Amino acid sequence: MSLPLKELRFGATEITHILLDHHARANGLDKSEMARQIIGEWAYRMAHAHTMVEEELAAKRIKLDRAALRSIVTGADSSDLDRGRA
Image (tube, rainbow, N blue to C red; front, side):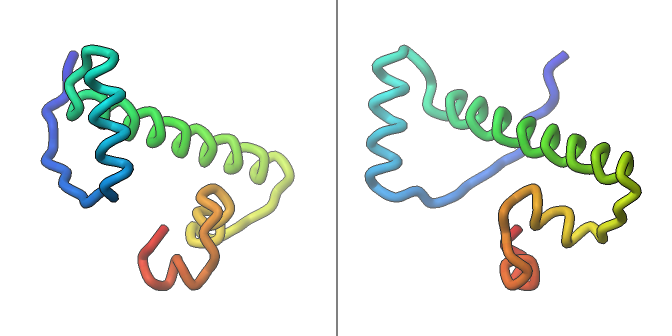
């Protein structure tokens, strides 16, 4: 089953754009589909890491608030969390 797509727009550096464009063309891919795959794989890895950390913390009976847990999983420091960057 295919889920409906949501619009996502973002800026990319010229170098990133060139690399994505050439990779897509070299592999016969649509650049949008390639970006969806990359972001989807990243999101899956983040969710998996979060689950693994939560399971280990629960096993060791360590309690953290969501902001602290998110900073551990994403590598963001607390100032990034305060500014909504993580």
